[in-house]
Every structure is written in C-alpha cells, then in structure tokens.
Length: 168
Image 1 (cartoon, rainbow, N blue to C red):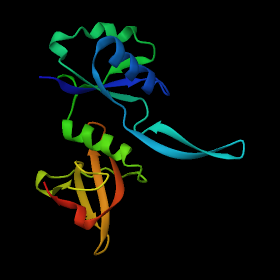
Image 2: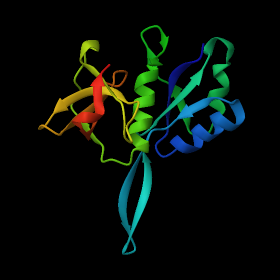
Image 3: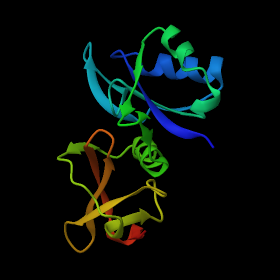
C-alpha cells in the first residue's frame, strides 16, 4: 500500500520538486496551495504559493522505492522523519489541505489544537466537500473549519456555513 510521506525542500522549490517526483519517478504528489493577491507594477496579480512552505507530500511504497535517488533532485533536502523512520502523513489530512487550497477561500494559520476523533466533522457540500476537520461555531449560520497537520503541529482554518458540515 502506498502511504503519504513528506519531503522537506528548499524554499520556493516546492513545485519543481513535485514535478520531478511526478514526471521522473511516477509518484503522486500534493503541494497544497493558496492564492494571494499581490501588487506588481501597479497591477493586482493573483499568485499561487504553497500553503506549507518547504514541504511536498508524496505517495509511495518506501519499501520498494530507492530513497537515495531523491537526494539527486535539485531542491530536495530530506524526508521528514518520525520516531521510527520516515513520518507518515494521514491521507485525510493531505486530502483536506488540498481541498482547502482548491476552494479559493481565505485560509489562515491558527494556533494548533489537538482534535479528538469524536470531534471530527466532514464537509458534505460546497467547495470544501470532502474536507475533514473540526468545526468551531461562530453564530447560527457560520463557523470556522479547522484542519490540523499533526505531523507539524500546525492548524489552518477558513469560514464555512453550518449546514455544510456533519459529524465524521
């Protein structure tokens, strides 16, 4: 079975490393993005930036893949490690981050809060459909959807309507 792992790459090399992993090594990759508005020469431009700078998620079976080839990739630094070797990134967190980026909603990094499994919700409709996280109610109609990246002890949040979520 292929699991999600995380590569630590040099700053602003996220997209190039992901492309090499896809094209040359046929690995699934994920670089969750956010769209930002920038002023350049008096013009407003929408630019894409990684949601998590210096990290590229990739799906592989590490037992059948030669990790030493990754060190030959320009921009690749190392594989993020856990206590017992390369750290696994939970599939639902990677998918939720990717959904966040594709939704084009404003995303903010907030203080990390560990979520217990019985507090989890799933978004059932709208641009964030399929995202799994924690729902913090703001008022009767809206609230904040919080997605954790437990591996990095980081959390991202965005606003969502209350009728679009259900317990997971």
